[in-house]
Amino acid sequence: MKKEKNITDDAKLRQLAEKALDAAPAGQDDLSGMSPEDMASLIHELRVHQIELKMQNEELRRIQGALEKTRDRYSHLYDFAPVGYFTLSEKGIIEEVNLTGAAMIGVERTALIGKPFTRHILREDQDIFYKLRQRLPETDSSHSCELRLVKKDGHEFQARMECMVIKSRGETFRQIRAAVSDITESKQNEEALQKSSEKIRFFAYSISHDLKSPAIGLYGLTKRLHKDYADILDEKGRTYCEQILKTAGQIAALVEQINVFISTRELPLNIEKLALKEVLQVIREEFSSQLSLREIRWSEPDDIPEIEADRLCLIRALRNLVDNALKYGGEALSEIAIKYKGSGEFHILSVKDNGTVLTKQGSQQDIFAPFVRGKTSKGVQGSGLGLTLIKEIAEKHGGEVWLDLGKERGSTFYISISKNL
Image (tube, rainbow, N blue to C red; front, side, top):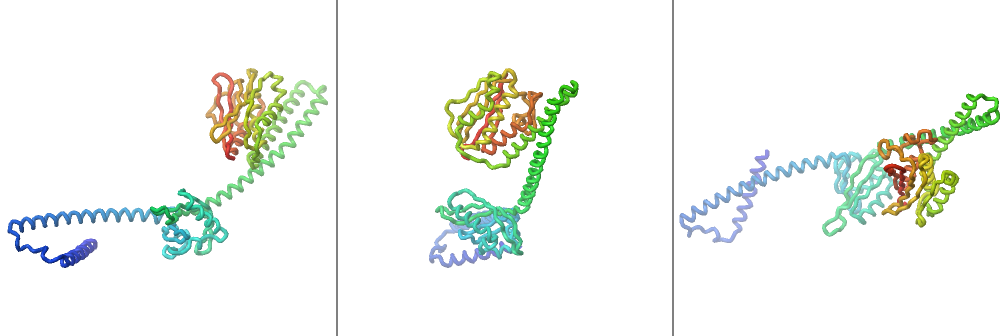
């Protein structure tokens, strides 16, 4: 079949050549004055030229075959891609679409060409696409949106569109290229996860609320028992009372810390301008009795700029860091230093102590995981949520928290806060 096609092409080419020869001016092909030697040379040249043309023709056909194979391969990739590809005019008319895109809408490809893309967008989501089209020519980058598309049979599905403008050499608007993905399943999974998260959150609130009252009641009753009847209890009874008091206190403190963690994680930030000096004063006054009793020196910068952050969250974070230094610094602790540094797009606060160095365990980030407590915390009351809470606060403020351990003594915790909240 291909051979017949080539013969037909050759015949057409010969006809065109003969027509061109007939149209040439007379006299150009007069060979009467040529010698036999010149005639032989001319025939030789014509034969060589004929062979060259044949070789060039064969090479062109080979290249054409390779191009057709490449075109077919990329056409297959285009048509059967896992996403729908749409080429739209400036007015949103469909100029080209792959088979996947046509299958998404449930309409034959030929029936889609020349029709407005908006015809297949849910009426309530038309504005989303309109605003996207308005933004596209303003930048050379791609833009995306999520909207609902309608199939031919009337069924809706959630879609994500990733669009960019294709411009001509004169930098004028030419086309919109759009990649459309069906995200219905992922949206359903997201909603299911959200519902599951809400159930877990409600369960956590319920448990922490239900545990707190009995723990406080147990603590109060045991304290009264110890106070009123300590004289008639033997040493073992008094020891039991003290252990119950200690355990009940730990349960109440843990429940309270869980409540603080949940509220910090779930509640939105209340961003306001804060004078860091005032925030540090609140922290210093809260721990003033411990600092004085243990003769621990407190230092902070004389000049600290205002920052934008959530006041309650920032106080919680710094309170936990100072509390950690006091809890785990040991008897060697004699100084707690607060420092500030502006770095690029972040405010960086640090709390440094010169107490007992924290035991290195696992990676630096392990210490910020919930309920993780190192060897240095043995015998020290705590919930294991303090550093997790600080990490949560830092991330909600667009920053992070990290630890720098001293070689022999002390440690420094850093917390960064974005300047662009």
